[in-house]
Length: 297
Image (tube, rainbow, N blue to C red):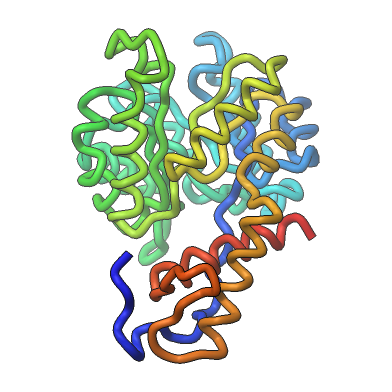
């Protein structure tokens, strides 16, 4: 690291709100399961109208989800809904039905291939909203080679887009990927695109084996090292493993506290006792670590 010039390390800025760490998918045609999921400790409950629902149950799933979201506070956790693919026959009705409901905290858009998909979702949402109401928060899933190629364009398509994430099952199938190495570039591309667009670090895609908690923990540790923050889950037993893997350890917290303390009490270029120089970017990273550490307390 190049030493900072004198006066370039400011006092720590106020901490930004924490991004969610756990996103729990639940099928939209199972309102009893959705009700239980709302109280299981997930940061976000993702009601799924797409892959988790059989074709002959999708109309019912939409009705049940709309009934749930007529309540401004349907449960302890915010509720997002994953609609069906934007180029299919159902998404338009789903978005128009859900966009204005008071209990909706966000819409997750599957198989987004480019910015046009985001603009279409915004336009559909606005048909259900009185002017000048803003559209709901949108989250794009990149699940194709084309979506990965357009990652930054998607991430900057519209102010209503609050986040991007990978959908790795579909991407694996399209790319013919047989091991983790084949996903290294799409994963890094997604992380870089999100951060370049000023969005929160993306969460990891789901880990499909709900019994393999050791494998989940190892996969989360690898994802955190790549820059992901948090993860989507498909079973409540995965939630504590995901959260623990994405929280800083004692040594990391101690180092971050040392950096923030040094930046608060000294001006200019800082050198820690072990010889490391600290600049504004290092201070910002330490602040993020301490913000995450607060979840342990």
